[in-house]
Amino acid sequence: MKKTLALSCVLAAAMMACTNQKEKEQLAQAQALNESTKEELVQAVQERDQLLDLINEIASTTDEIKNMENIVSINAAQGEMNSNNAVASDIAVIKATLQERRKKIEDLEETLRKSKTSNSKLLGTIETLKQQVADQTAQIETLTASLTEAQQRIATLDVQVDSLSTHIASVTEERDSVEAVAQEQTVLANQCFYAIGTKKELKDHDIIEGGGFLRKSKIMQGDFDKSFFVTADRRTLTVIPLHAKKAKVITTSQPKDSYQIVENNGQAELRILNPEEFWGVSNYLVIQVD
Image (cartoon, rainbow, N blue to C red; front, side):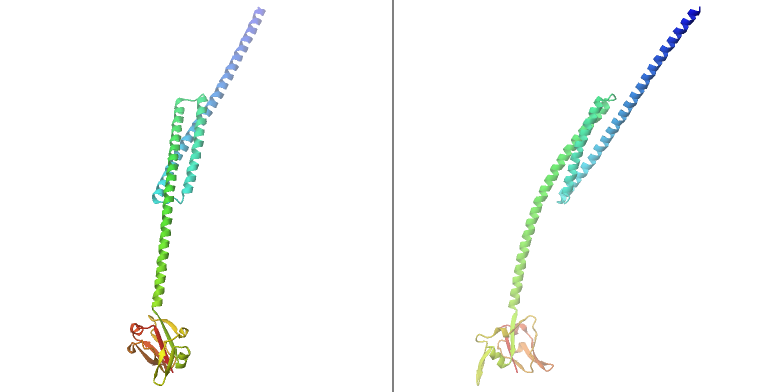
């Protein structure tokens, strides 16, 4: 009886040991499954977040491309490409960004295909993103071509403007030259010359010669001294101070009613009353003072 009881105890202990071992194995399996599920969950969340980031980035790029298109369109229409270098630089940045996006999508697609949590919906989203990037790349290429065309057209306009500016400058220079010549000719045409001196001074400068008893003096008949004459503008010359008490006009080309000699503070002065008549015959005037 005692042997039977001891054997029963041994068997019971063995069965309990087997049961505990199974429970330990089941617990270890449950823990491993839990850890695996956690890792898959973390991976799934990361893949989802990466996909959402790509969606947001691609949407942002679409807005940037539209903005670039508006800038190129407006500047080309206005014939202004002062910021063309900046626009070209921005386009280059977008191109580089699209290349990075394409690489990210390819990497994520590969990860999803290998992932235990991969599904057709996520892969379908990847295909949609790939198509959007391809469309954006095509838009950028079109935008680049538009920018190049606009720059070429504006360069042609710049050449035309430069040519027109050169022509205008040439015409302006020619006009100014003609006006200067005309002004010079007008000044020359209105120049008048007068000499004031005693009889001796006038003779010494060969302005008058001869004269004497019953003979008239000849005025400016030979090689007279022109430096003795004062140059003036007959349009503005109205009064000539004579710095003498007595004076007379000895040239005969000035009509007597076109001028008068009057006294002013004890000194004689000649006043021209009618410039047209006074200078009508000759631009030279000789006055003899005493």
